[in-house]
Length: 128
Image (cartoon, rainbow, N blue to C red; front, side, top):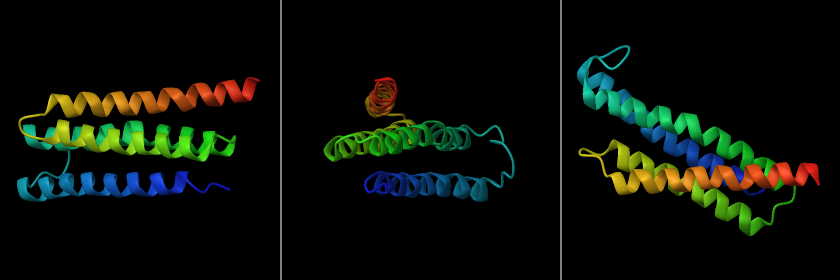
């Protein structure tokens, strides 16, 4: 049974809903039904949402698999925090006007690092 991963899956889902709400507000205010309407702010909001949708699920799946394979709880928490913090920092960095490159870059470092570590741990544990 998973005890830790659901915490981070839920928090990241709430983050995704907040990011999605920004897209909905932009669509409503700019009267854009589909696409970005050639509006740079709308394009940015959509990319923030899409980037979260692209990276978060893989991180959550790897986190759950590592937890199921017996990764120590403290390491599951560290990995979950890294994914959550990475997604928050990236969303703020990319979504701000002007962008905040430092937050965007560190958000990706945390996210990619979090994906890499459980990916290697899962493969290693499965093989050996």
